[in-house]
Image (cartoon, rainbow over all chains, first blue to last red; front, side, top):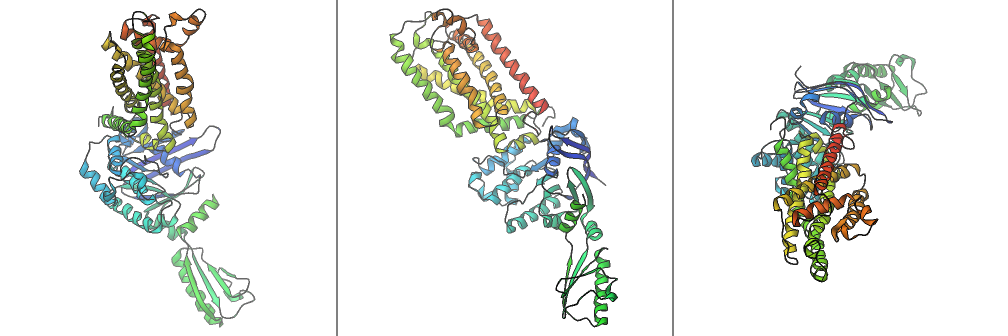
Length: 309
Length: 257
């Protein structure tokens, strides 16, 4: 594994306040998209802040690109980009000036061609001479991304990148994030939109109350923890689940017209069980008018994990 | 980028801040120049012509260093405090904190820009004063050096206020309620030798008296106080501000969570 970021035993205690980070250990691989999920106040933004220099950790260590943050913070920060959650930028400057400023701030020589490339990639080139305050919300968020990309970071943090943007723009941003990854940028994103993580992430981490609950490959996670649910609409209502069907994990709705199966095993095992259930129903002469199958999403898994704590 | 110092980063902060001053030129340049010019018209040209000279200097020329400081102290402090408070308020400070810039680059950028703006103001005010009052500068190099010293000290002071303040009202407290009254009472319009005791002794407790007289000495060669005390106090204030700012960066007080 080629680690780009290694966080070990990271803690953040606020005086007279909560413990925002409670011994976080996390390794990010070079070139991946890592989605950090967690409810509000879980510690996602604090964790990003600790890596990016916005938060002073109380303990633990951070290594990035093989360098120690405490000693080589300048070298490390020069290679990291951050898109914050809040719409934080000087609204009275032109787009091109804001992005050029960010490049200079990170110690790079002016490069109009690079700035143009970044602005074009984010469909901002036509708006380069507009003051940021005159742009739409989605465009403003793109400006923040352009600023973060202006110094060509190898590791990019996106803190709730699509919060408050419409569905179309969200899809557009997903595409742009995928393009960044294709260009070799490692991306860590926090999000409330589970479908965002489901769509883009290679690996998923779940954080709650400052502790990492789980880090797993997205597909492995979904096949391990994902369950299958099947609703069978009955032609005639039943009074109770017939004893012959007792081996299946079934519940009967109050009106007796819907049998619900919920598999505990992997999605594949559960599909087999649903097939067996259908065969058993036919064998018993229980007529049904429809079957609605639903595989649990990352959101269901996330909720289950956080509830378990 | 040299890994010990990010010169491009410092330049980016500096040039953006100076550009902001020109973008808001009416507020940051023309307004203070206009106010100071009105003082020259009223106290220098109109009333000054009927006043006796002070220490061998015409009254109009006598008040120039004090009026210059009256503007510089307020503007330098306000510009520097705004320069750091605005990013804190708007959230754009995230970019400064996440960039490879440290205390040196930040201060050179923000404080340096406030000083540069004040030097531009100084030049405009002195040129404007020429239209209303005839004056000489006895020690021009020392005058420039002293203005630089005072502006740097008060820009650092403004930076401290900008970090300390948790609201826009607090940002104005020190310039409006402390610096301006102390400067008015600090011998801007009169020599403290004109005051009867005990008011002269009371006036000597006002630190601005030493600043005004320090600058006045570079203009006319005349001072009500020992100029070494003036330079020493200004230097001590500068060092004190550097110490406070260094502590702020070391601990991250009100800068980093």
